[in-house]
Length: 378
Ligand SMILES: Cc1cc2nc3c(=O)[nH]c(=O)nc-3n(C[C@H](O)[C@H](O)[C@H](O)COP(=O)(O)OP(=O)(O)OC[C@H]3O[C@@H](n4cnc5c(N)ncnc54)[C@H](O)[C@@H]3O)c2cc1C
Image 1 (cartoon, rainbow, N blue to C red):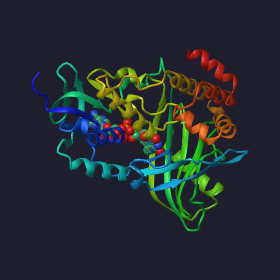
Image 2 (image 1 turned 45 degrees about the vertical axis):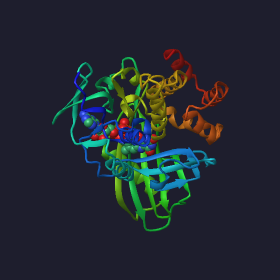
Image 3 (image 1 turned 180 degrees about the vertical axis):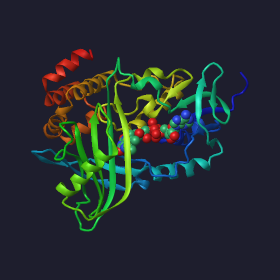
Image 4 (image 1 turned 90 degrees about the horizontal axis):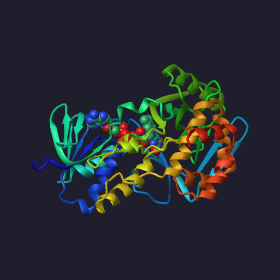
């Protein structure tokens, strides 16, 4: 093969592509290696708001919009305060992330941004075929999800889908120090659906109506439930919608990890880096990139051992229960948040718990449906 155009080609300059490029850029190990980030979109809009928890200081603190030390979980029967210390919950607007990372990387002599859309990658010739041009590289990091992940014969798929209104209210309605992780008081037809509230100030908040369901819905439904939450729970009709956010995150045990090869590493959602049972992926991406970089430095396949089988199994069981008995959503999450400390919950979702801690958490959720799901996913 002739000398390739690039050492690495990163297909997709979204969250995972830019986090990866950023880490490569900061590591002297990769100095001098030419990298192309190929992305069709300008990334000039705030298309997502990422939230995540972490202990103490983190890599993105300088561009964070808001941090909370306290949260709430609210069901139709209980209202639980969540004292997060030593964790905090952080909000990062995607536009701030894109602008910050891009301005850093554009100054690098090793990294180029290319506006194009990749149609296919040929591993034999190590060529990514773009709509504009072809690009050769020694290795590709690819954010495009495999086309068949929605075919669910062998995997379970539900959708986390939501619409959010960033509102400004006339009166002061919010405690800006406390966010609401889940509020089940307004619920769509016995489904796993709830409202998520991220207050930025006493009169500004992102309010999202969210579903974890096997079905998708339409704009009118989100609007109806957002309206109800504002009217019936927040008791306001005087607000202005400053921004809207709409999104869908696949929650699935589809084996994304099997799609990576020695030449093409699937990253982000396409790599299975979205935690299947929660839909969170921002911090997960940081952790997967750590492992991936260690693999590269140790001359292993970049995608080697990025996943824990134990947690994949737990996620698969949980998804199967939610898919078959979506009406259990409120009671399952109520048990999860009331019978476990928030610190244990974060450690469990971060895949840091011991087996005996896992058992305790699993028992706290117990419902016969778990046994059925357990045997199905064995
Ligand atoms: C609205 C929304 C809110 C979310 N909020 C949170 C949150 O609060 N916390 C959290 O942890 N996770 C959250 N997520 C989940 C997850 O973090 C995001 O989906 C995240 O953007 C996934 O990163 P990614 O790089 O896989 O995908 P993206 O960020 O979507 O990046 C993929 C990129 O690939 C590009 N691309 C696609 N096809 C091609 C092609 N053929 N050629 C070249 N480029 C291509 C796309 O244009 C895109 O820029 C949210 C998701 C959504 C949709």
